Length: 239
Image 1 (cartoon, rainbow, N blue to C red):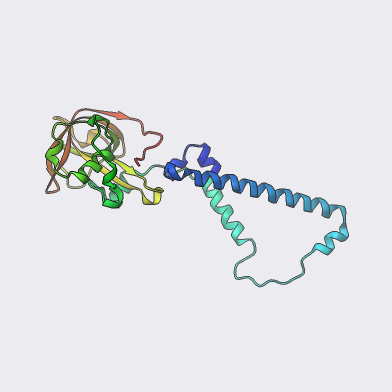
Image 2 (image 1 turned 60 degrees about the vertical axis):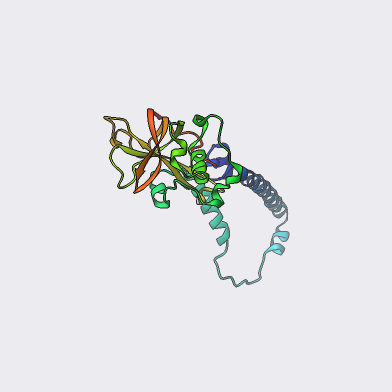
């Protein structure tokens, strides 16, 4: 199962790249342990087949009292492995984003603002870069008319006007269990509406930053000059 995720390119949907080595190391160690165990079993069977008396002497006649059925732990491990071989991990999308709550700002434990500085070229910033900047410098007018070029999946937040949508990405700090979504509002151009951009579809948005009022508060909003559909990237997370 671990090798499948490793060589199948799906491991980064479950783990932060900094921790992928833990899973890969576990896969190698488990493979070596399995090989050692298999060699031991085959050697024991070979010795047993050469001597019937040895077989009779090696039989275990002791009675054990256990709380769980015999080989229960092996059955659990096997069930997990079979599930992992059948299941194909998928990146989180709008449903998870809505359930976990979409952040336009980050907590200090997530943002680590001392690490961040403004990029020389605003269009090189990703969604998480913009969110980090807003977390440190929360005044929306500070970013007025700065160039924007971001990619993410589409969300239609409840209660927003029909000519607005959110472009979002999920951020991974350790593993998929702690993934959380962040997003930026997009003011659609004239004659466009949410239905033109289905939920969970991936888009690339280029334009300029503006200030708008949504959910009764002022926030940065992308005024796009171009919105195009793209394929979901192989690694859809931000870090």
